[in-house]
Image (cartoon, rainbow, N blue to C red; front, side):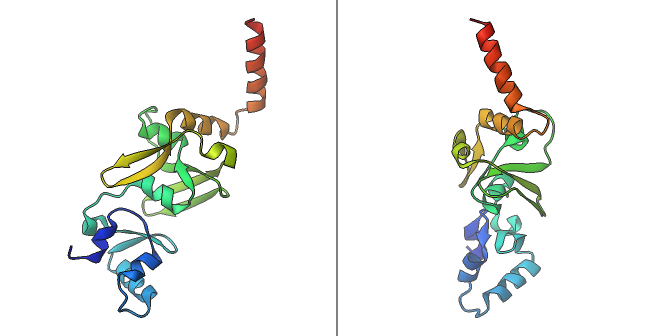
Length: 172
């Protein structure tokens, strides 16, 4: 391994992890600026980077980036439905659910949108998807659809619940 950055592969890394590779340089942030200037690392947000795939030989995963960019989170809604091949249209924004406040990030790899979800609903219906030497967290198809419906502005879930109860009583 000629370049020490290769050990990170396509996994997003913190500034401190990068600085630990170069202990002989007293000011680690200076080395990070140089690595970024030389296009060896790519900034996702302040303090979080990915190594250039030309150096690591690993293809970057926007799903893995989404999990690390704003954690805890999982890929969901249209992004997950497209990943599973359940919708035909292209999805240009990586949509995720998080326990934190809603937030958006615009990066070199596209737009990442995070929607708040309650703690009780967060961990239900998640799966870990393994690829080569990494894994990322994504909603199951059913969970992705539920997240999408629950976060669609024109859907009145209260009315849908009342209608569902009425349909059940009509069928008795």
